Length: 93
Image (tube, rainbow, N blue to C red; front, side, top):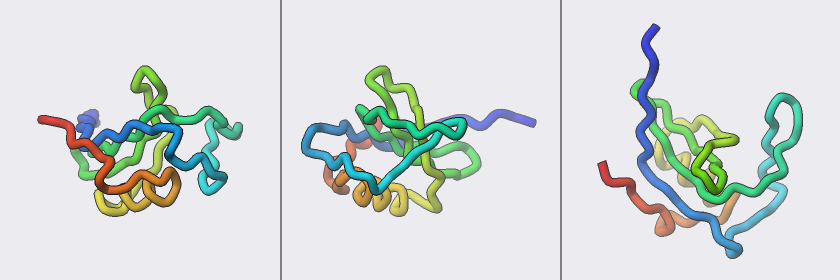
């Protein structure tokens, strides 16, 4: 089985102005993740899977959602974190 390659498409830094609301509860190994993400990333794998990553200050992903497409990932980010479409910075390829 070959490994998929990850391509970061968009990045959005989170500031104090972005929502930190109980709309999203993330779990890792059955324990709720309570740390606040520093940045969101939209990532695509070779298999055309789109993920919304929550990343820490070092850019390490600690939670994610699998989304149907890019528009859905952006909608999820806006709903959960208040990140508008205009906030996303496209990553140069």
